[in-house]
Structure formats: structure tokens, C-alpha cells
Length: 221
Image 1 (cartoon, helix red, strand yellow):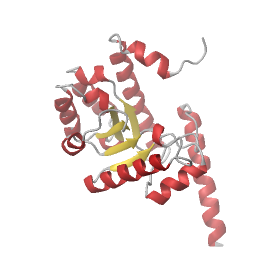
Image 2 (cartoon, helix red, strand yellow):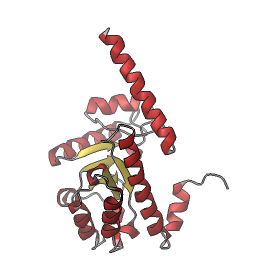
Image 3 (cartoon, rainbow, N blue to C red):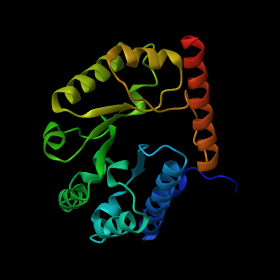
Image 4 (cartoon, rainbow, N blue to C red):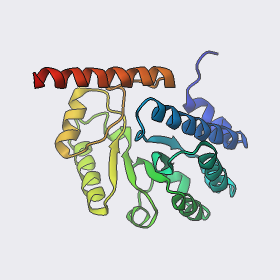
């Protein structure tokens, strides 16, 4: 069937315990990648990992993550777990799971912010470090004043709460420019690159820094 999008296979995996096995494998690969980044001279790269509702209800989840951190000797602060609003709604175990993982030194991002029943009290009391503006508010930034105002409001709110912000789904320079003017200093999207395997990503990063150094040398000269 060729490459299958996560949008197709993740919902199926979440209907069984396969999502737990898959989730642990992804975090294991994350730890391997962090060690490879360090070996390549990038010790401060942070990797974000999506966490499913099933993982948050698995009482073994914090212990498994702690075991992987010890096994691969990675800095837990370089792991950012992305949790959706729907994953923590009506999930009594979510708070204790997040607190246990936070004690390990792991960071948290609230993913797809604005698509669920956004709660200010949830942002205030749960241990989030970052909010990710859903791509639905980014797609029409060039033409939609309401989406611009929503993004400004989210950035202002997060500034008050001391939360970092990432805008998802940035695909062109126009969107990037608007977000930069608003004060958003972290974005992700196809404007920079599509998803890549680890080796290709490292090649992309090495090339980026090489060109950056050449630019600095040129201006310095």
C-alpha cells in the first residue's frame, strides 16, 4: 500500500493496545536520535513526541519513559511530550501522569490548541511549557482577520502565563512574516521542510549550518 499517513493508522492503533507498543517505540527512537544529535555536535536539540490518550491512561507509562531515559542516558529536558486537549478532557489519571513525568524533567506541549474546549484553568494548573497553535488558524492568515486576532490573543495569553508558543502548519513566507510581526518566535511547517528520516534530517541541518557559517564569514569579510 506504500506509505500510509499517521492520520489513517493512528486511529486504528488507538483502538487496541498496539498504540502503547507503538508509542514506546517512538520514544525509544527519540532517545536514539537525541544521542545521534549529540554525537553530531547538536547537544541541545529538543524532540517533540505526540502522546495518545491511551498512553496517558496506562499506569506504566511514566515508569517506561523513565526506564528509556536511564537506558539511553539522555537529558529528559530535551524530550517534549505533546498532549492534545481532548486527551486530557475527562481523564482523571492524566494529571497524575503528567505530574509524574514532569518530575523526570520532561517538558509538555499542549497540541492543537484552540480546536477543543480550551480551558484557561487547564493552561494555568497543568504543567505545560508550550502551546501549539493549531494549523487551522494558520492556513488563512493572509486573508482572515479573525484568524490573525485569534493568533494574537493566544500569543498574548501565553505571554502572561509564561508559556512558549509554536505555530503549526506554516507553509509560506507570508504566514511566517505575519507570525514574526506578532512576536511568535517558533514555527513548524512545510515552509522549512517536510518530514524526513533521521539521516536526511541531519544532512539538512548540517547543510543549513554550513550555509549560515558561510554567510557570517561573507559579511564578516
